[in-house]
Length: 610
Image (cartoon, rainbow, N blue to C red; front, side, top):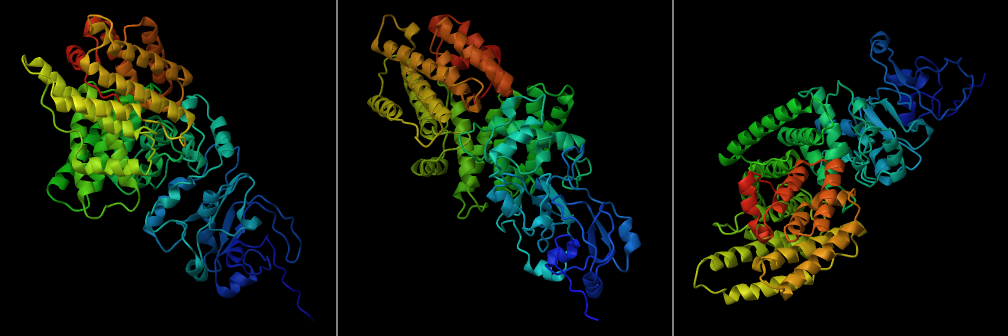
């Protein structure tokens, strides 16, 4: 009698589907798996059918059970993974958080489970993340499915890892997530400021990263961390990373660069968690966050000191991590709203460490991370110059290596999440400070005239600032912020000779400064105070506030800072407003960006305006 032909089906066992073999769909072990002595995996929850009977074809993948010829009892005792559903309270381990485990087993495409992301608007990055078959067996109606990771030898030999060998955590990020699906995730979250959710390509592919309640408590990714760590990591991805970056680029390096590095180094991870903790406490979004923030902050400082000790003793491979750590600590102090000037110690260390990193013949990193570190330092140092004593001894803010690296970025029209499209302005601010330092010290000594070199330098700097035009490639908000920086830097330069209130009579310089203040206010009125780019505007707002005594202008600056405090929640924004209130209490003739240091000293508020 002629045998019944085996018809290939999409409803066979998972093992035959992966091997792209025909399955006779005999349960619990099909003939193909029995013949090859393989593990036979079947969807769970479907009615067991008789051999040869038809079965409806479904789009939704059911959870799988495992049947093995020699160990069926042991397999039955193992937990059964579930496919994620929309009504689930607890989702499986986040795909994005599972991916770093690949580094422990480079031969396998996954450890325990292979994650296949699928949605209506699936992006190219999400498709690259999945290396499963493209038929109905690898798709789910709910947006994703999990299949068992036990693979046969021929599957493993033919498998291609979706993670770049240069970055063992490259698969962690899906940078091209469709904005519509991202907005759907955002709509499920309530009670968090809408500022946290910025539609863009920097979003993670794992939905549970946006909802910290869904991060499972037994994640093996952070075995040495407790429940607080999962909440802080989620908060960092939801709020802190977006608060640090100003949204001028599609990809946020605080996620794309620092998160992969954090999963490869415990210090960077702990620093990020500490930064998230102090930001959450500053934003007052956690009633019991004070103790957690203090603990993580203290632990991160201890770990950083230990690493610095290893670096000083000459341990190889620590330069990159200690440099990144020092810069992360700078913005951690910004998030805390530290008023003791701790940030200036970290910034001084960053200068030396970054110079050493850039001076190496070959960079330790394999991508453009050094460019981000240069941008990071330039943003921090330019925003901190005004806090220095212009009449005291001063070291150059930029080393030759950092200055050359910044020039290379300018040549390629670099735009970033910290410098926006105004990197050129950031390179000029330290030069303006150095000029003011020279001219003010000369003016304090009787009988000494202004140096001709200083006059020429003043003219060159004014020409460069006036000639600055934001890149047309930048977004409208980024261009507006760049023009605000331009006006503030002009005010910073012109105020070396005094402010309008300090002049005995109306002068051309006073007219220019009043016009620059009005121009800056007009630009601010075009830029909503709730926009993400405002996170970079503390420095220009402070300069403008120190160059005017107009109550209307002061109220405009006050209202903007209050909105920034409410939406962004960085501690230094609150301290900036406090400092400006003290500045406006001074006699009009004493208000100037170059006398701000005296006000800071009087009220013991030592902050950076980053």
